[in-house]
Length: 428
Ligand code: CMC
Image (cartoon, rainbow, N blue to C red):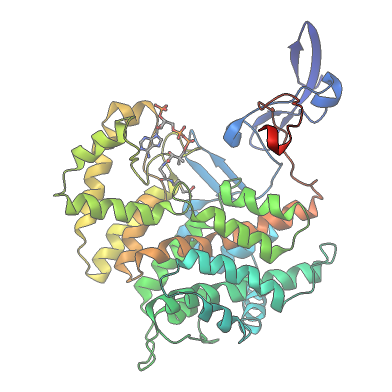
C-alpha cells in the first residue's frame, strides 16, 4: 500500500500521498489540499518546510553535510573537474566527453562578443555603482540585443541561449569591475580557457602583457565550482519563479542576481570581509563581537555563519578553508584577517549559543579572504559568486521549463481590515 499522510480538520480526515525522492526524502503532496478541504491552505514563511519543486540537479543533506551535483560529490568535482565541465554537468545532466566539452567551449567562444552599444549603457552608470547592480542591469539589457525568445521545445534554441549567456556573462562581470576601477574594457582572448580568459578580462593592464597566474586561475576555478549550484536557495528560487511566468532566460537570471546581492545570501561574502576588517580596526577582540552576535538587542550577526539547510557543517566551507591556507601560501600573502577568521571560528564552535543553534561557518566565511589574496576588490566578491552560480541558475531554469511547471503563485492568509464602507475625501 502506498504511504499517505492524514490531516484532520474539524473532525474530518483528508488523505494525502507521500512522495519519496531518490535519496529517500519524504514530502507530503498537498496539491489537492484546497480543493478537498474547501479552501484550507498552508503557511510557511521563508519556505522552511516547503518543497517548491522536484529536481534532479543537486542533492543536499544538511544534517550530514553532503552536497552533490547530479550525483557527484562536491569534493570530487572540486578536486578533479574544471568549472566548464561542472557547468555542462549541471545544465545537461552528464559529465561531457572530450568532444562535447570542446564543442561547448568553442560554441561559447563564438558568442563571447558583447554588442558595442552595451558599453553606452555601462557608461551611464556612475563609477561608484555597485557591480551587482550593474551586472543585473546589463544582463537584463542583453535581452534587447538578443530579442528572439527561446523556444523551450527546441533543443537547439535552448542550447544557443545557454551558450550565449555563458559566453557574455563573464564579459559583463569583468566590465562591471573595469568600469569601477577606471580601466578600459577588455575583450578577452579566445586562446585561453574559460576561467583563465575571465581573469585576463579582469586584470589585464592596457599597457602590459597578460601572464596567467596558475595559482589564481586554479583557485578561482575551484571557488566557481563550489558556488555553481545549491538547489532551491533564494536566488535560484527567484530565477525559477520569474521564469515560471515564461519570462526569458536572461531576464530571469537578472532577477536572480538581484536576489543574490542581499547580505543574507551572496552578499555575505562582502559582509564577512567588512566585518573582519571592522574587528581588526577595533583592536581584534573577537570575543566582543561574539557577544554582540549573541545579543538579541543588537542587530549584529556573525556574517558567514549559519545556514538554512546545513546544520552540521557546510562541505564547501571545509574545502575553502583549506584552499585559503594553500592560496595565501602559494601567493606569499599574509592577511591578518585570516587569523581573525580562524579565531572567530574556533570561539564560535565552542560557544553554546552557536552550538545549540547549529551555526557553522558557511561557504562565504573564507571565500572573501581568497578573493582578496587574488587582488579582487571587496565589491566584486558577490559578482564572483554570481559567475559561479550562473550554470546552476541556467540548469534550474531549463529544468523548470522542460518539466512544464506551472506559474509560481503562492497563497496567503489575509490579516488586514474586513470590508469597510468607502469614505469620501471630505469625511476623512
Ligand atoms: N549570527 C548570530 N546569530 C545567528 C546567525 C548569525 N550569523 N545566524 C542565525 N542566528 C540565530 C538567529 O538569531 C536565530 O536565533 P533564535 O533562535 O534565538 O531566534 C537562530 O540562529 C536561527 O536563525 P534564523 O535566522 O531563523 O535561520 P535562517 O535559516 O532563517 O537563516 C541565514 C539562515 C543564513 C540567513 C542566517 O544564518 C544568517 O543570517 N547568517 C549570516 C549571513 C550569511 O552568512 N549568509 C550566507 C549564507 S550561505 C551562502 C548563501 O546562501 O548565499
